[in-house]
Image (cartoon, rainbow, N blue to C red; front, side, top):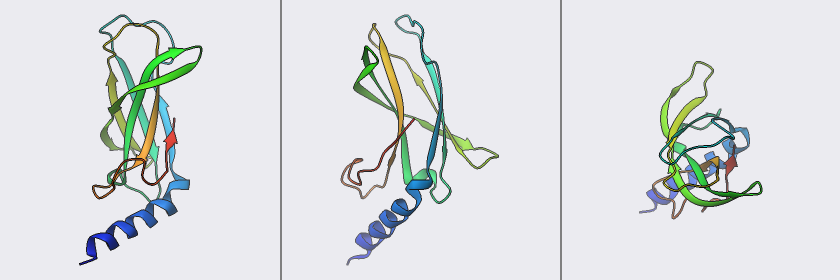
Length: 128
């Protein structure tokens, strides 16, 4: 009867133990001008000694940028590509803003499990 709750509790414990060792590296265009319809290719590598890609989600968060402050308005899930030779997990996304103006973006990693009520439930996030 409580099997699903035990599985989720065990997973949460695994995340709490593994999260401090998680590192995020991001590569993508950081400044310059884009015309409407142009894309930014964003790549990210997640090093997670004790966690696997199924344990977390990687997202691009973007929105209007004013004086180095980003107003987050949109979330774009990144696609898992492969495990690199160094053991990191590679993710990619094509950011194609639908509005003109100055935009800024960041990449975040959040714990992810189908039984979680919401992606912020555990209060854990890693930004890059």
